[in-house]
Length: 311
Length: 231
Ligand code: SF4
Ligand code: SF4
Ligand code: SF4
Image (cartoon, rainbow over all chains, first blue to last red; front, side, top):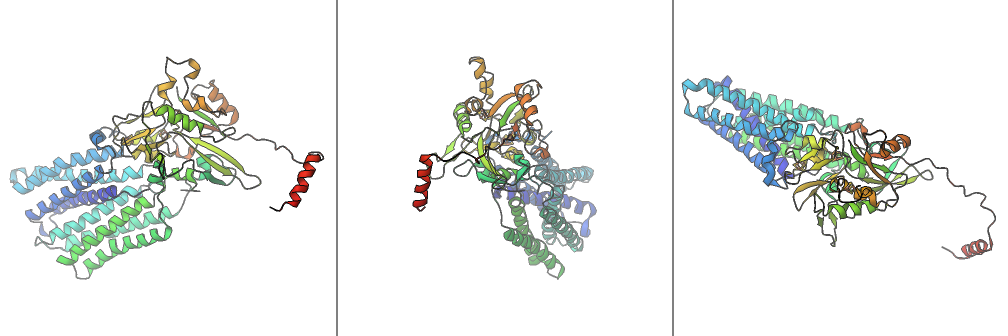
């Protein structure tokens, strides 16, 4: 698949935003590290909304006919893309009420603050799951058609969200031990799930082949002529392929820069100011590489008609 | 009713006439235009509803060239419709034709990701998704003679490799030929249940080139010339 930058930015940014919001709520509810000061909660909450909003706006740049984008909320009964949009929109009012009540600090409405925050967190989880299912539900792409895909999206969104929460908490004079432990636990879970995913898609399994695509199952099938002079929409959208050695190098980058460096920074006494910000930046760089690879490694079955032997 | 095409791979000669007829008809049809990019430039490309590819099956000397036209299969379980967030893609209940409402499409490409058969192409000019309409603006036209109420590609095919009809009706010509010739669907493992079927190449006894009789005077002269002239 052709890796479109707008979609890469959209998934990384909105994933981190939703993860940040859900973890902010949990940290607030459990008073992690003695409880965040109101100012830090507001910064984290608003940053989450900005990340989600920027992601959704960026996804609009992917559309060829954005004037009809409003219609995308209409088919939530069948389409995960539509569901993703609907859940993201429903998330905003709950998140905003939670943040407003956090700001106003009205004891009489504390219950409402916790309820709306909880519903916001729930919607954040459902929305990340929906983002993953946009890809996970496609039977045409073996590398995506797996429950590991939404699991990866959830784990990576929470890992990057936790790192950003830690960076904000580090300015709030709270005990950081719990926040660091949270980041490390999510880091291990996210890295493990990604490793399982890479292991899983490396095995070709029993997917479609050029034989099942054409029905010529009695012998070898070779493409003689693609039937087009120059590229088509199909070759532009689905023809992208990445050489094995580059994919391997990028996977190393994901694990080194995305997971190992942040883990080392946070466990070797660099867990103040600069070290934490460095961890956030390297992790996000790793996530962009991970997302680019997620698209680049996906092989659509239509390539079988263009001569690929198996997908 | 479940309308669709049956493609006879035994007789398709790969002339691309159906693709041209399709483009001609649909360039002024319901989802017109079918934009071309750089039609006279160095890198000509554009929107087509029907594409013909050619494959070689088997190894020499037991190989065969097979020409392979593909357009929308008007699948029974069409995920392209399920995934469309705007409702622009729809499948008609009355005849199973899958269409894109050009006024609703937002050009997200998602349906093309869900189509295994490469039947959907984005028109970069209009920003909307386009695909084979099964010539819906032709097959129901009361103003043209009955025998012309067929898709443009079917009417034009010089080899009669394309047939149009109702796959749901067991007695229709298309159902019968699918039954008799072992017509099959592409990539059945994905579960889209395409309406279009393909008829396999028939088993043919090769015409022997042995014992062709003695060479005549002309052939003997040719043989001598062949031996003299070095190639
Ligand atoms: S061939 Fe593709 S576009 Fe046509 S109905 Fe099937 S999935 Fe949809
Ligand atoms: S490109 Fe158009 S028809 Fe296809 S899924 Fe998007 S909105 Fe629907
Ligand atoms: S049925 Fe009509 S639209 Fe479809 S491939 Fe044939 S000519 Fe083109």
